[in-house]
Image 1 (tube, rainbow, N blue to C red):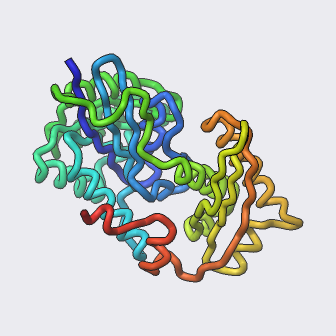
Image 2: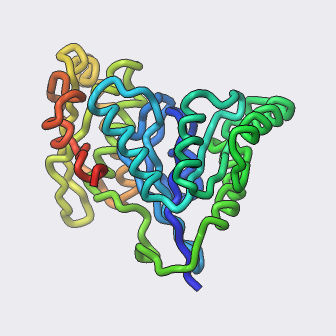
Length: 298
């Protein structure tokens, strides 16, 4: 008997949504960094186990939008919850519910969706603090399950997946059993490059970057990829390239490692850096860079 469900993973920035999904999937589907607002698009992960198919939506971290890119990201969260059969709210186990968590709980209540609370980063707190946090959330909403976890180490992630099984319903699968994600290969390549930008550069610069794949050619036992990195300021371009091109070379080397692991072939990667001022507030640029409002509005 086949079962399935669409499950949205929501929470504030940098709380561990992508890390949780990657661990449940057993594959690195969504990029991860220590910087907030790493995820910009809804990333779908499809996990098929026996007769069960879980379809996870990894969503951008909920924050107060400061530009049109931020507006797009928040629409993506609302759209994902609207398309889901259930919601996993992931929060920091060491902190009480803040305005963002309360906002998401209200959305869960309004949509009347079954839900799970995952309290992450339990490795950083004691049992008393965890019990206090659980009690605080219990006063706000009657979740169908509460699971403390450490997504980074994978502790209790199997329990999250086990509890998510209650959200599955009898029905045909939406995807073939060997599907991992709905992301096109070009988008996966672009996200890998962006992850390396986030991990390599200083705090300010990465959030003003976008990556577009201009060439993605499959040759015999090799992928030839040309990626254009867009930044907002000439000074940022200098930081990305680095002295003698060293920083850009480092970004490329790290990206190739992940690409070859994911695609299973040798990768030739050519990186270019261009300036596009204020692209995060340009509808035209956002659309060209893959942040299509019509897709989430529809």
